[in-house]
Length: 193
Ligand SMILES: [Fe+2]
Image (cartoon, rainbow, N blue to C red):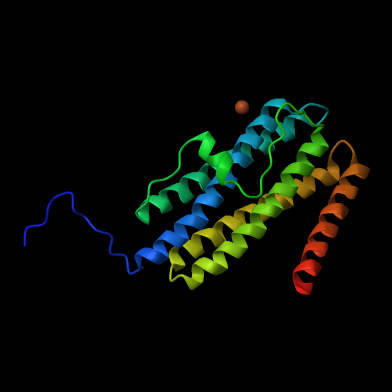
């Protein structure tokens, strides 16, 4: 048989339903990553204070990593046979855990606090998605997501380290305590459900 040159199917060992479900998870992750990427650019451009140099560089390092994550997730969606969202309007709708604050320019330590909170949120969501995707017969995507979690955990550590030494060490300690309390509270709520 001579197949039509454009009639190229996808035969990667996953069913159409499995691929569609994986893509749904990936699109949400793409939305979260893109909104966080934008936020990191904003903080890179607008950070002020005595720690301007290291924080300007830190946010740049993070947004460059975010861009790599975005590209990885977007191209995985294409490999699974679907179109990738590619507009700010779509990313804003897709994000499920990153909130923007247009027109607000927090002090440096509160920028770090916000980024740390966002990173923990992404880590938590991606971990949940990874478990579901693993059950959908797609270890390639689940491995990719574990890699993403690993990178985010490293960045969270760097953010915490900067918070410890940032302009307001007392505020930083409160931030870390607050985040730990939030995570513990979430876990307790989940267990009691
Ligand atoms: Fe720059």
